[in-house]
Image (tube, rainbow, N blue to C red; front, side, top):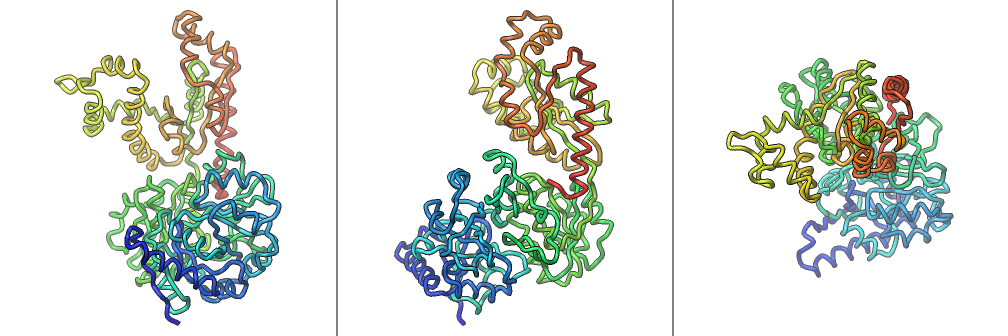
Length: 556
C-alpha cells in the first residue's frame, strides 16, 4: 500500500490546494481508510469512529491490544449528544473552558458508537482537538474520528509527520503534515461517569487547571502505578507499557541536582541520558538528549517523545532519564517517562518539602514562619532574593530604569523612596514594576528551588500567588485571622490607631482571595503569638508528614 503524504504546514498557501488536500483526507476516512492526522498533543492515527471495520484496522496497523479503548475526535460540544448519553452539566462547563484543547472526557456512550472503538466498554472518550487542519478534516468528513497516537504500539508517540511515516508508511492510506505538535504529550483524560471526577491519564491540560474550575478530582492509581493482570483499562494509556524505546529506561525522580548526581554515579560508556539542559555537561562520555531547562515544562513536554524515539537510532544499552516534579505538566511528562521505564523508578529525593505561605497583614504569617523554623525548616525570603538581584543583576536594573527613568542615582544605587513614590501613587505603575520583578525573580527562584536537597522549606513572598511563585511549592497555605484580632495585633505591633489599622487591612485582598487560591488554610484565632506558634507547629507537622508519605508512594 502506498501512503500518500499531504503537506499542510503552510495553511496560508493556495486555498484551493489546501481544500483539495483536506477533502482527499476526509474522503479516505469516509471510505474506511486510515490517515495520520496532526493535533496539538501528538499525531493521531485516524479512522471513521462509527465504522467498526475501519477501527479494527487501527489496531492492526499499530499492533495495539484490542482491550485498549480509543478516543473520538469531534469539532465541539454540539456533537456530544450524537455519541454520548446521560451527559452531566459539568461536561459542558469543561468544554466551554477547555475545548478545543487537550482534554478528553469519558462519558456514557450511545449505541451508534461501535464496540471496536470503546473496547466493549459502555463509555467513550471524546475530545475536540485544537488544530485547524484536523478540525477542518472532521468537518469535511462529517464523522467523528477515532484516533489513538500514530505510533507502533509500545513505541514513543509521534510529534511530527515524519515520525508517523517512520512507523506507518505502507500500512495506512495517508499522512497529513500539520507541523510539529505544540503540546507534545497526549490529552488529559477525565472520567465524568463517577463522583468526584477521576483523572485517568495526565496530559496536556494540568490537573491544577481542572481543579480550579470544578473542584477536587480523584487521581486513578494507574497514573502512578501499573494496572495488574486482569484489570481492564477504562482509557488509553492505562494498562500497557507505553512510549518505550528499545533500550531499557530507568527514571530518576527528585530534585534535579540530586537526580543528575545519581545518574552520573550509575552511567557507563554505553549508557544514554535524558536530562535537563543544565546537567548535560555532566555526561560528556554518554549520548545525551536534553529535555530543555529544568524550569520549562512546556519544552520538556514537547521534547520527551523525540528524546525517547531518537535513542532507537543509537547503540545505547540502557537509558537514564531525569523526571520533573508532579506539578503542572510535570505530572504528564513524568507519567510518560515512568511508563516508558515500565515503572522502573529510583527516588533520589522524597524528603524535600517546599511550602508557600501568604495572607494579609496581621494574620500571623511571621509567627507561622517562625513555627516552621522551629521544626527545622529553612525560610526562603523572596524579598531578600529580589534585593540581592537588584545589586547584582544588570538586566533587571536596566529593565527597571527603562520603565522608571531616574530611579537610580549616578552611582548606580536604587533610590527606593523615589521609586516608591511613583509606583504607590498609581496602580498601573505598581503593576508595571511587579511585572518586571516577577519576570526576573521567578526564574531565579526556580533555579534555587531546583537545587534544594532534602529538608523542609517555606517560601515567604508578599505576592506568592500573583507572581506565580506558588507553582514552585508542594502546598500553599493561606494564613488567615478574624478581622478584629488582626486590627488589635496591627495596632499593638506598629503603634498605630484603630482607624489606620482598619484602613491598612481594607487596602489589602480579603481572606476569601487567599482561601480560594491556596491549598490549605491556617486560621489564627489564638490570643498570643506563642499560642499560635504551637498550633502552627502541629498543623505543619501533620502537613509535612502527609506530603512526604505521598511522595514516597508516588502521589501527586
